[in-house]
Structures are given as structure tokens and as C-alpha cells.
Image (cartoon, rainbow, N blue to C red; front, side):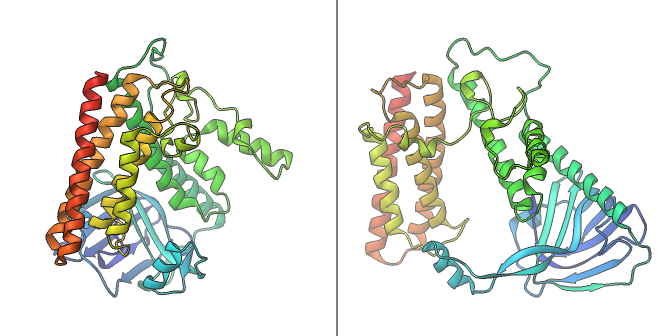
Length: 397
């Protein structure tokens, strides 16, 4: 997915004084040599024909930035200093409190620096910040509105091409998959991987276009959902105010297909409790859910994404949700294929391994003996669930 390096940027420059070419140098915290940009294409009108210099007042070294190749040859994406973004008007601590309490977060609209390019080596790279100091030179050439529209369309196609590589859909010209019988664990794992790629790609697309006035159309185009794109066009032409996804005429190559008919699996099993709400919980799923709830009580709630406490809770919640999807309602008449259950259980093992690792990290830095004992109990319970899943997989096989 995208490399987001705005926090690691110390300072840099972007030069689009030659029409059709955008070059630049970007220095990152902890690195002596700058990234060298050599890109085909132009910036948006506000930066086209100018030299942009920018500086980050508080750069932070990051592992992703350290792994980037120095040679950033490729094509431009959207490059502008006037992208409109919502910026919270409260401190980070107040933001976290409001977010956790599901309260409205006050914000203001600000111009944001947005530098995006598609590198031949690293793929999509993004710098997005409203906190840089910017210096823009006078325009050496002017881009008109038609030129900007053409460049934005080219950028949109570049994003679509990149997402197609991320999703890696099955070849529509290839043979149709045989779904006449049950799929084995490995076939289901491939389907789940495809669903993961689709979910990750869509999340990235949402993050980019969610504030855009044409977000629906751009998201559908970039994701390759041409059936949905046609349906949106029909809706706009008819002047309808509401649109139901059920009315979209998705083609056989689109992703909104029922996986029972051989299409992509929609990875929404976290919500399966509603389907089996009248059935007794499976003991293993109930045990996993209780562990996830206990972990939320034990670990500190101030840990953000990437911290051991965050990883511990989210991985345990994943296990609980996925087990609910495949183990609930076994007597209701719905019986998932054994291969599908095996594939999901294998993923649960991976999440449990990550949860155990995160728990171990927390134990190593914990000084309170009671808190450490609670973490040890969490780890022990995670091992018990892991052993039960291994045994269940053995029985299914």
C-alpha cells in the first residue's frame, strides 16, 4: 500500500518549472542522502510552473521512510498545496477523549500540502501535511483549467492502475473457477487473501477521496467497479437523490458478487453475530470474546495504532469476530464448508500469535506486579484458545 512519510520529512523541494517534468529532492530524518524524484507529469495549477520548498518543524524518524529507495523515478500523482482537509481544532489528548466517547470532534477546513507520486521501485508514496512551512516561487509557465483537468484525469488513471496491481483480480479471460463442489482450505485461503487485498485497497481509496465532491464516482473508477460507475451515471442522469447498491448492474468481473457464486468473498464476518443471534454461542468463540473484553479492561486505553496495547486488543477482537462467523449457529441449518472454516481458523492462529507477542512486549515494560500478573493471565488464556483452535483444525481435517 502507500508509503506515508510526512512525519519523517525534514525538508525538501519540488520543481515543475519544465512542463511535463516534475523533479525534486526530499531529505528524511535519520538519512544523509535525499530522495531524488524524477517524475513524468505536472503538478496542479497552484504548483505547476513553480519551485516549491517545504520544511517540517518536527520531523520524526520512521521505519517506512528508512526503507524507501533513493531513486524515486516514476509518474506524478496529485501534487498541490491547496487540497482541502478537515483539521481538528483540539489537542491530540482531547481528540482521543472525544473519539473514544463517540463525541463530535470540532474541526476547521485548511489548505493541505499533498504530494503523491508512483515510484517504479516503491509504488505509491504520499506526503500530506498542513503543518509544513512552504515557499513557492513565481510561475515560470501557466497551466490553464483544461490542462489541469487533463492532468487530474491522468492521475486518476494512475491511481486505478496502481490499485489494480494491489487487488490482483483473477483474469476475466481465464477459465471460470469450478464451484460445483466444496473448496478446500487452500482455495478458501486464496479467496480470503483476495478479499483482504480488496479491503485494503478500498480503505486507501476512501482515505484519499472521502472529502472529494465526486468521491463516489472517483472511488468506483479507481477500484475498477465499472458496473457501479455506470449505475451512478444513470442515477445522476435521472436526477435521483438516493441510490441503492442493489440496483447497480455489476458485471461478472466486478467485486460485488456473492461468494457463493464464485466471486470475491466480502470479509464481513465480524457482523455475523446478527445472523446467528438466536443460537447458543460456541464455547470457543465465547472464550475468545471474553478474552478480548478482558484485554480491553486490562491494557491502558491511550495506546494508538501500532502500539503493543492496540495490537493486543485489535488482534483478539479479530479472533472473536471471525470465530463468531464460522462457529455460531451450527444447528441452524447453515453449515460452512470445512475448507472455509479451516482457512479462517488458520488466520485466527496468526492473530493469536501476534496478540501473544504484543502481550509479551507489554509484560517486559510493565513495573506494576498486579498489572503484570493480569497480562500473564491474558497470555495464558490466549495460548489456551490457540491450542483449542489447533485441535479443532485437526478434527476438521
